[in-house]
Length: 309
View (cartoon, rainbow, N blue to C red):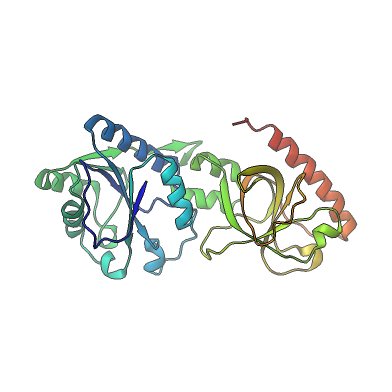
């Protein structure tokens, strides 16, 4: 996949089949758009082009959002989907001020699309005032076809980035994973903690996440999968404030099963499979240790039941 983030260079695509959006999380609704694009491109001999924005428009316009995917994560997911080109438009307030007609004309002149594939509820231009009806109308004038991808629902949930965020903030990692099409993950470097876990026989990898806007799911203990240098391990992850030791800073710490390597300052990815329980305060470290043994048993049972890839 070619990544383009310099719009000053000439762009030349062969019968481009394009889509436009933020694609945060690249969930199964987004994936249905990508699959439609690839099918059309295969039939027409064209190339697939995903046009997205960086930073996320809501962060630029002062309406904060926690991100399901960092820039690097989004790139990796889109690359694995088989898209030919990813165009990252630098998003500014000036760019956001374009009217919907101006935005469509800019897209048409810059990318010369043969087909635009778009979700049923997509809005664009100033204040998201542009709709798919605008695209249909301008498509006739500017020479591109418009394909609308219908709404997708799963388990009584509308598939959208905002619904996935809500599910994760409620601690429902299972349904969030179903809407994403993969487990929700966080990636970061392992940093030193207070060594309490090691003291009671459950050493943890404490994760530092560089992206401050990355969404951290609800506090609690999760069965998890950990990827380190291409190898995958079972584990359990605590997200919380560690009230038993009177800590007051949110941490993400993972006990990796059957693992004893020194990985300080190395990068790992933690996939959150299912929340086992809420975080709670225990009377002492011995009670906490006994609870962790129970948690580990539950996590192992859940993880061994997962279908093997």
